[in-house]
Length: 328
Image 1 (cartoon, rainbow, N blue to C red):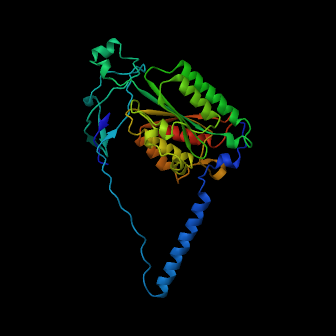
Image 2 (cartoon, rainbow, N blue to C red):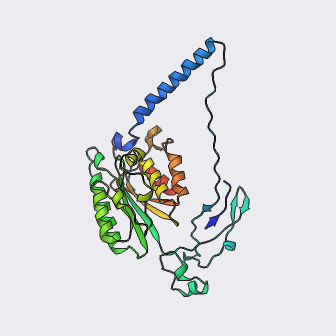
Image 3 (tube, one colour):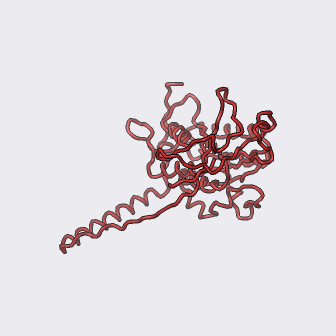
């Protein structure tokens, strides 16, 4: 829908420090730069005080962004959970700041399940005019680096990959398009959006074993016949530099998927990420959290998280997976 806009166990598991505090590779360098900046600012203030002058004010940066259209993804069902067909702009009411907003258009998306029904015909739905695409991104937060300290987590990753293979072989619908990616110290794209099962199964196996990405090579970029992530992703060293943290990888994926109309479902296989705060509880990493959530929501990307920590074990970072799933 488019609208104009102005604006069960008590067991515990000892998770290693690397698993608990997933930070960017340049955190130490950032801290050094911060101290350099503070030292320079202090020197300027002392010099100004000695000369009787007011210290210079820090530069101010301003910008203005005009949003002409916002896409809202909605699912409307009856009391039995059946999708209500044939809804028009007049069937919705959207407000912003308490004020009603004009709805420009409504598009019905389906994987063809409902299109042959009498209800669809009665609602005047033309099957040829209904987009039948569902988009999935399978993203593996690679756990090979944690296996030495958290034994068993890599086996869980491989088991999750086998589950994904079975889903691709048994449940993939004709209109579905799936991309496969992984992240260790950079984002890797193993398969761009496609419905070819054999290609996707091979990509899932490559992602689970930590292989290098292939779909992000310039010669393998999309032909234009299918929506593609690779055409909007950086390549080579630029991709590595832009995705040194899992947060930046999620942001980059969201930006690449943004032009594709409809909901993009990102299945995240991970052990979680963030900070461990007081009393050993999960805390958001505010250097990245808000920006990542905003990028995902702006691009209409919903996270569905799969915890790779063995079942029955409780660990604080599982809350981060719930956090991202609920926020998107």
